[in-house]
Image (cartoon, rainbow over all chains, first blue to last red; front, side, top):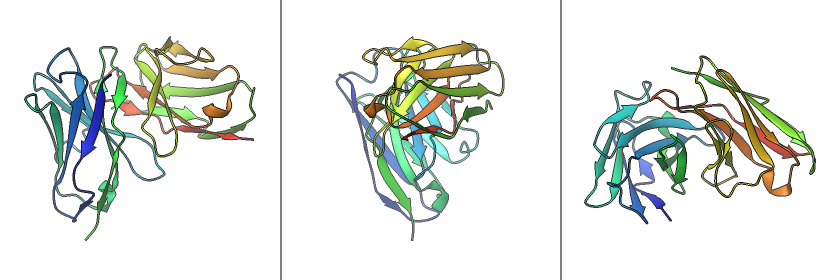
Length: 119
Length: 107
């Protein structure tokens, strides 16, 4: 059973860079044809797709965040990571990592981690 | 980008009711439409993929239909554990987008 777990600071100062890591267990991140995705959800609001990375390294990003986002993968650690630069209070949200299956479904999710942007 | 519009944004229903949620895409997405259920404090869980295919382990009271721009999620007989928020999501483009969500509450 594939499991994903987000980790990283829960508090980030405005203008700084938010950095999160998703650790995958129960399967190798480098095997199979999967994308690995980040999604966020502000409190009381809907889901916003941030972007995803293919195990080969190609990426797709939400155009509204593209200038500030970078997603990378480390197959040796079975992890993928999110960096979001120049954060503001509007970036405060629960951040989820997820796997995109062959049917282009987000089939496995992490539990989510709350990141608050505040001085 | 492809906009996904869900309706209604919320509804009240009783156990045993038949519930229908609609999702409309701003352009044709063929059948690249997935449905998720989210309960408070939890990650979303996929219910249906490719518009009408039931994810393994999901009860058969959930069904989906549609193609192109108009899609429907139906719960044939609402159960207590079904009170949650439901989201549609398109995967037609490399830029995934979600609908705004439909909160199903107890009447």
